[in-house]
Length: 482
Image (cartoon, rainbow, N blue to C red; front, side, top):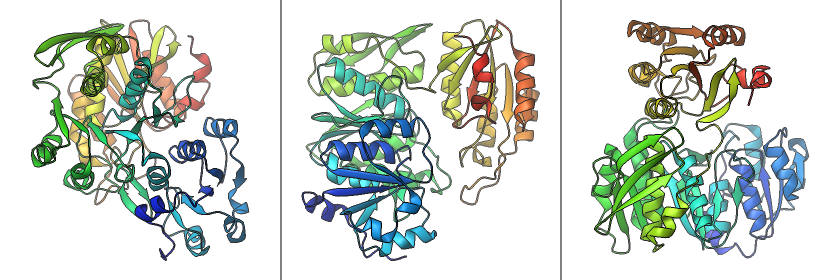
């Protein structure tokens, strides 16, 4: 590995006015595509390449006017015309193409570093971090700032109906601040490179077992950025790791404003009531008990919304204006998304793939669809979910369903020193708790179990961060009625 042409964050910031042409290598990544668009909106001449171009990312990029190339066209001679190469995280440090990029002679970096240096350095950046709820909370904050008359920039790591996944905006910039690493040469969390001014920490527990060996290693990533932040930090006190960081750093930097929220906190949310089409809660703010109504459903979404409310109130927006901004809030796709009905059974698509996320999602579905049975399909597909790290926790969370169908992953876990999740044992133990549970490994088996369960008194909840054995790519989608 030759990193002599890797440009540091500090140097990239210094040379930002000299850089004109930027090339994104593997531009179709979920973060790379939006980042490329933001760099273009910031005034740079942006081009990119990938091995294949598929909707929705390909469609999004085509609308921006960014010239796109096949990877084989990105030869060393071709790349020499650029001032900076941004390398996607899908490029392995062991790949021949990595050696090629390193030897071109052009400065290269990761997309988080390019974003932080070229786009975010002079923005009021609000990082939404945590194990759960990052995408949802980022979208909540963006909508509320817009309703408050702002023109916020944002980067959301999800698909939003009728909205691009990224926008440059004016002063405020809301960014999903992922703890996953940035590139083969930047083995650090993305948010460490985003030039954050403020942070909301929605949650903090062990995840990403393929790159972290313990939750303490994840805490260390936050320790790198918290001391230098210059504005507001809002932490969910329900998580031990979040509280550990709070006790280490709160009160140490006089320019920082710290707030704790969550169950049992002084601020709240308190008196949470969830209905089929919304929620109501109160916050204690400056000695006053303030009530908020919203269209969001479920305790976890109330927590996500409350963190945004606290930030906005701390910024000086009026209580009445924030109350109005909280009312009608849209959701990101694949977050409790009702996809339609299958044989009169409501079908919901959700991204949850961590035990706690599954628990809170099931709680929200119970609140929303009272008196209905919940049939849960779970596809453990992330490195952590495919491992045995949360064997017992998955059992306990999934057993909150009335029936469980486990879609068995066909690939072993890549968790550090991790064993594979024993899905057969998982199904057996859930069944032993009085909740029928089966394992399936093929789409045909999955469809058979869905058909057996389908009736008007049930809700089908599909938990997967991919296609769930191809279910979402099959004719099942065409059979759904809206």
